[in-house]
Image (cartoon, rainbow, N blue to C red):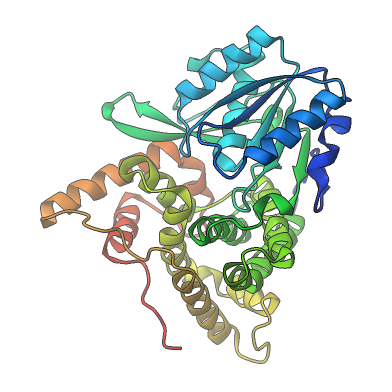
Length: 406
């Protein structure tokens, strides 16, 4: 644990069932003209968007919609959204959707402010610059995974300048990207498909675990992370079995927000570096990529993180009397089984026809992780060089889960 640390949570959080109806009255105190950012495909969310617009208009907020976000948004989407915001004279940006929408909204807010160019904001550099000026952001999650509603980070896809035929996941960060307001209404997640529920929960679980392991972990972040881990472990099976039951949805929504609080303070580690590269190179959805990477990350760091694993096992109601090594091992097995039983992938299909093709793919993945996720690799508790990254990627390609017996 760090001997000295700081912790900030400037985002106002409104949490609870039905809180979307209060959107207009709260937003009116932030600005009078808003751009509402949402999905291009709004299937299943039509009512949520309509209710948000009605609440804003009723409160006297002028609304311009930008419904152009794809599930894995790229930087060009943010550039178009910023232009729409400038033309509308927007004073704030509202992101209503999953992590993709909230991340796009943050990027739109940074670009629409007009002080920095897209080239500066999305520059891939060993020494990236924090975004310090942006329009205010209001984040309204409709899934329980990314924690973007409280984080100061946004991830988008961009063309790799050194390999134009490949995509790179680029992270932008800075205090101006942290939402001024998060409206977390668990009712917006009721009835989500099982596949999406599981993938988002895997992301929240990965955030929380990795924040616990980070070299930058601190007591408050670790408390939030541990509670998030326990909420996912206890409630994911219930949410999958009873998709319209409110209680497990509330728990998963809280877990995602707590995990966002934790990793914004402590950071993530090599698991998310693996996942970002898998998404950029192989175009896997982020949740599926995190589900693949989490067991690999846990096993890789086990030698130096056994006490942390044991403590997480205790928080998850493990048998506290067992020795720490036994607790840690059983807890890894429990996480692996949880991800498998949720229907998440344990292996990437058809990674390459020949050994040479697989090794070429591994090299591309290592390069992508190094370029796009330098900080998570540095924050990993166990030193991770390119040879180690290559071995970790081989494990994800060959199957990241050896299922324990029931």
